[in-house]
Image (cartoon, rainbow, N blue to C red; front, side):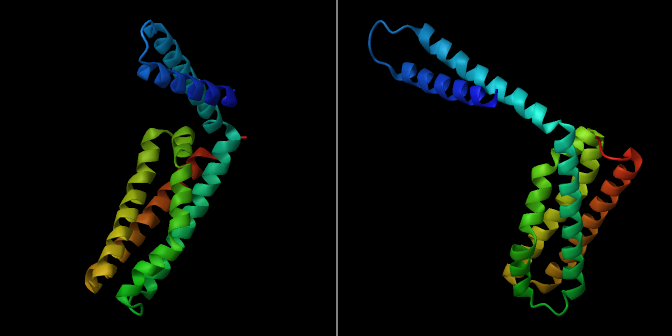
Length: 183
């Protein structure tokens, strides 16, 4: 079904594009509309397949595990940054962030919508708000490090660490109230 969706999407929109620029007389708009409709049907099929994949119990279970793993790792790295910030050269902080955080942050972001499917939209927002704040504060640390503003960098390391810890605490609270992951 997924391949059919991609085929309809590609063929429909390419064909519609061809008819949109066709300069001959006698070419009917009907061909363009039919091709465009096939492309739209392809988009619809792909959305249906993606929704089924995203809401499968196995995908949700795997994504929730990835979310917790990545968030635990981010918290540990943020805590290490907090503990060692006084001994670390301010210009080195950005390199540490570039080296240590991107993979975990990306893993969390890629799996985040399973929070909605598992807990609901409000609980998703409850976790995402401190996570996003922690991410913004980490970006502020990076910028302050680049500019050599040691006091600002140190202050935002602390704030980032606190926000990531809060996100993890909220996530664990949600998991405790929900019980075991779906089977």
